[in-house]
Length: 99
Image 1 (tube, helix red, strand yellow):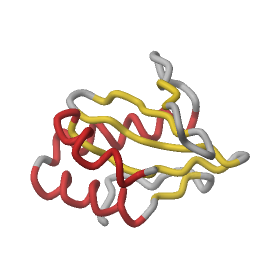
Image 2 (image 1 turned 30 degrees about the horizontal axis):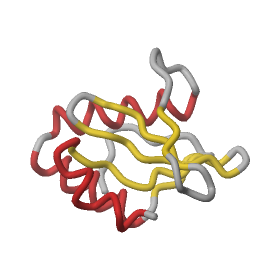
Image 3 (image 1 turned 120 degrees about the vertical axis):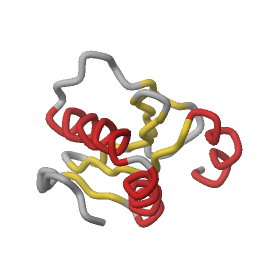
């Protein structure tokens, strides 16, 4: 995918999220950098804001706002899974497929 800095070893990215991130990197490297930085902060648990827990998911899914994007993720033990990165305007369209 060509990320600016490697993520910690306990972070995994699904194929869907990797596709989302690659598309964002190609279209808008500056916004990609912000999202990537927020993923790193999420992994180190150094975020100024708290992610929102979403209803109806097992395991629980969380959403983190990152500018005009949302980072969807789950924690499975100590492993952080990045499940998707969507513009806020795209969320309702693709949200159903993430369940």
